[in-house]
Figure (cartoon, rainbow, N blue to C red):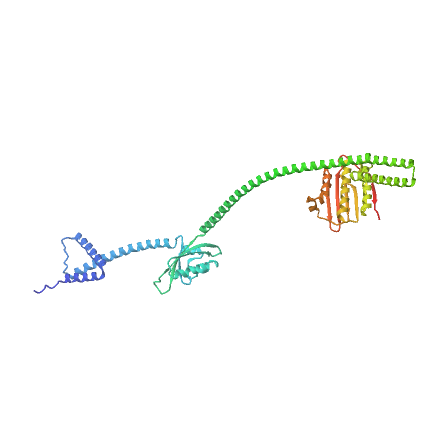
Length: 490
């Protein structure tokens, strides 16, 4: 059965449907909406006047009206799309240009391809002149190797890379910057480029530096606290040690003072004993021997018989007795010369030095001022004993040929010096030793300290030795001329 040929309206609808299908579902939907809207408008005007789709002019008018409505709808949608695009562009501008960090696009040489306003502000250069400049030129020389290594890692495609470097703003001010970079694929050409995010971390760096300093300060304070604690412990230990040493020193001083007092008592007792023995030898033994000598002289006159033999024996006996008397007198002078108590210090020294020169052959010279005899007996005795001991040491140890004893007046006391031209010795070692060889020096010092005096020794190679004894005047005020006594033998 043959098919019924299609009408012109049906053919136009089919062609329009195929055209809309080729333009896409959205355009087909748009066409249907426009046709529906046109149909509603016609229905409002007249329901009676129905359109005859079979009529070509009417159909063409219908298509034109539908197309006009379609264009109006497209224009409306395009306007809405433009408004949305402007809003999105404004948001993009806010997000990109005014971001709190700098966004840069770089090529492999570090040339700046794109940069936002924040990035240009960080570098201190306007955005337009900044394009095509190399970012490494803004990096300080100290940080440039680190930044170039960062770019190399980024373009190597090793993922997201970071680094920290110092940048120079235009004008010479530097700041710390933090870089985050990742490689990108170009959609225009084969060239490589990367995206880099830059942020100013100067405040953070300063905070970190301040924190490091605070940590270092805290560590130093902690060490100082520990050191203070250790020092307090040490000070407490030292304080206890000082207290113990002070107690020991007080005990030592007490014992030393007791020893000095005992030594002074011994020396005083020795001096009193020598004085007593000297008096007894002089008053008893010498008188007895003198009486014997007188008796023998009487017997010599009254004896008979062989006068020559009797005289010879008697004369020999008298000589022995006289020699004994001289020995007793010499012994008495050694213990304590009577002339010291009877005549004074100067005659006693003169007599002793004469005997010293006669016995040793060492030339002795004495210089003194006469008013020294106004010193107290104990003081004059100390000076005599010091001179006696000093001359004895010269004879025993110095190997000298000459010795000088001088007694001089000072503003606040008396100074006696015994100087020889013999060999020297170590003074400190001699005073510190406790051997019997140096007890003479210690004895001289003890004697002088007994009367409030001071003792000193000077000894140097080629200059001999000088003993210095000083005694304060105290209540005694002395004055007068100088007497010089020379005791020398050829």
